[in-house]
Amino acid sequence: MKNNAKQSGLLLSTAALFNCLIYYGGRQFARTLPRFNLTTSFDNSIPFLPWTIIIYSGAYLFWIVNYCLSTVYDKSGGDRFIVSHFIGEVICFILFILLPTTMIRPEITGESVFYDLLRLVYRLDSPDNLLPSIHCFASWLCWIGVRKNSFVPRWYQYTSLLAALAICLSTLTVKQHVIVDVIAGILLAEISYHIAGCGKGIRL
Image (cartoon, rainbow, N blue to C red):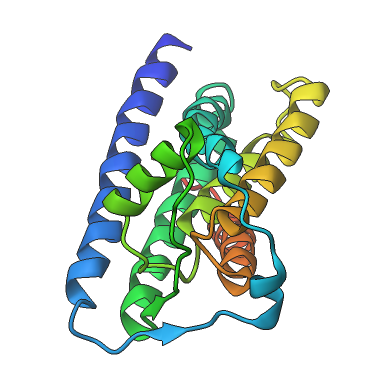
C-alpha cells in the first residue's frame, strides 16, 4: 500500500502538470485562430447564479480526493484511470486547436464574496479552451473512478455522482461553458475510460 501510494502520488503530480501543459499549450496554439461561439437559446435560458462559483471552485478539492481514491487502493483500476486521464487530455488538446471556441460572459456588477470570486475566475481564465469542458471531463472521470471501486463505500460513490453533476451544472450557471461543452466533457470521460480498458494488462 505504501509503495502504491507513492507511485500514485507521482502519477497524479504528472497528471496535474500534463493538464496545465494541455490547457495553456492549447491556448497558445489557438490564439491566432478564429473562434466559434456555440451558445444556444437553451444556454441563454439558463440563469446566471454567482453563488454556484463555490461549487465550480470546489471541483479542485473533489478532483484531488477522487483521483487519490481511484488510484491508491486498486492498482489495476488505478492504472486504467490514469491512462484515461491522459487519453482525454490529449483529445482535449486536439479539439482546442481544431475547433477553438469562445462565449460571451455576463458583466459582473454585484457586490458580494461570490461576485468577487467570480471576477477573479473570469480574470484568470479567459473564455477559450471551452470544448470539451475539462471541468466536466475531470469531474465525470472522478465519478467513473469510484463507481465500481469496491474499496470505496457505496454512499461515497453516490455522493461522487451528485458532486460531478453539480459541478457540470455549475459550469453553466457561472457562464464558463455552454451545454455542448458539458456534454462533450462527459462523453469524453466515458470514451477515454473505455479506450483505456481496451488495453488489457495496462501497468504504469
